[in-house]
Amino acid sequence: MAGLDDAFAKRLWGPVLSSVKRLMIEWFPAILMFIGVLVVWQLAVSTLGIREYLLPSPGSVVNAMLSSEIPWGKHILVTGTAILGAFLIAAIGGILLGTLTAWSNVVGRALMPFLVFVNTLPKVAVAPLFLLWFGYGIFPNMLIGALIGFFPVVINTAVGLSQIDDEMLDLGRVFNAPKWKVFAKIRIPNAYPYILSALKVTATAAVVGAIVGEFVASQSGLGYVIITSQSSLNTPLAFGALVWISILGLALYGAVAALSRVLAPWAEGQEN
Amino acid sequence: MKNIIELDQVGMVYETGSGSVEALRDIRLTVREGEFISLVGPSGCGKSTLLRVTAGLRPMTSGSVVVDGVSVTKPIQKVGMVFQSAVLLKWRSILDNVLLPAELAGLNPRKYRDRARELLELVGLGDFTKKSPNELSGGMQQRAALCRALLLDPPLLLMDEPFGALDAMTRDDMNLELLRVWGETGGQEGRKTILFVTHSIPEAVFLADRVVVMSPRPGRIAEIVDVDLPRPRSMETRAMPEFGKLTLDIYDTLTGGQAKSADTPRQAIA
Image (cartoon, rainbow over all chains, first blue to last red; front, side):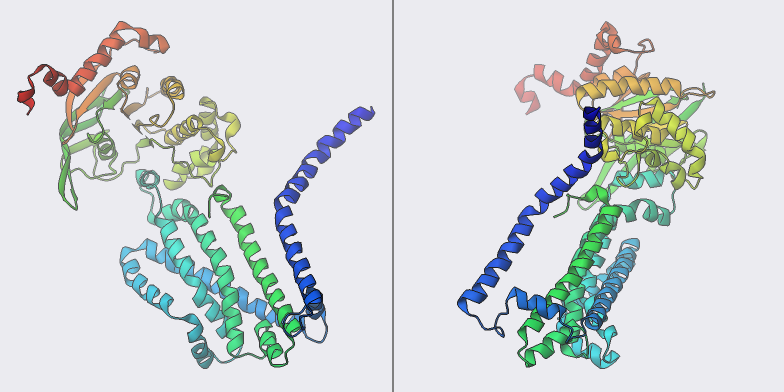
């Protein structure tokens, strides 16, 4: 009987254990690398006697990140909102413009050169203008992030919608299917992997844009924390803000990656 | 039997960057309802173009195409198409792929679920309805593509080198499978009419009632060969002397010019 129970337990827990094991093996090198860097950093700071305003130790960064001197929650919320807003504007705007470009040749020819021109502008240099037009606040920061991030979405959407087997389009032609239906049922799902890999780039661009905006002018947000901590040589605080920004960026990137596993599981492992 | 396809003096010229190309010239072909026609010929002889012109997917530049009594000027919904690659949509299950024609034609796909399942059952994919195309072998994918072409029960099936990408063993299997499905999905109106494009002469002979042999540039009909092999056909059919003779005849027609020039003196060619 005991043997039977064992077999049963094995069948029940086997798959769980093996997937835990697989995750461990997959993530082990990354975790080891991470811990290694932290250890070297901590050792370097303590043995070489580097002063805290030049390079704070990991420990003091963590302390600064959790300290109640700074209203972290508020700053994270402000920057997080700007990042998310920038991402959504870039994603929705980019997908719409890309679809429009692929839908109509004429629109594509009219739109593309203009979009390329806008993309060559140094977006960081445009930031002060946005502040002039839209005033202080989260909105101009969102726009800067969106401006940096939208172009890859337009291009990848347009390319994804047109990268399609002629035979696949023949399927639609055989049944006289209307254009919108071919887009909805064939072209758009076919473009998911392209769009989603552009959105991963946009997720990072949105973070850059939001922080640049806060650098230029702001009264709150993690970029603002970095600027003010510099004037008081509170370097642990700047590092703390940096880590929080990375966490926000990683969360957004992770969300896009998860979305792509749900929407385009067939493309997993194919992209670069 | 009434005629289902009437091609009369069909010609097609298309423009490219470096001038115009004549893809088809003076194609005359009449196909009776329920006939299995194979089209063979070298690459670039316009076989695939002829298939698409018949379906109304490409416009001809001269002549006329009549399918089921109606002159073809735009896509006619009476055809099912099978291509060299299965072109299954990777984001859909096998069942949903088979149901695609209903959705594209603006019909309610729910009403076709039972038929889709029956068809998949018929080709031995009954247990794979929920799988994704990636999980199926090339032969299985092509079976699913065949089901998709048959979903709306079209009177005419156009197949463009459907088994060309499969290995030889799978290809032989699929040939038998196609003949079986063709025999079983006839219904009251009789068998479907099939136009089957292939590179392989033995495949063309094995499947067809008539083989249309085409010559290249511009694509013309060189010969139409009647295949009087008994049905149902099986692997033994391939061992019959008539099978060998027909295959060789078609081979001679296709390579005729060159075969003769081997006997002729060198200077005649130069």
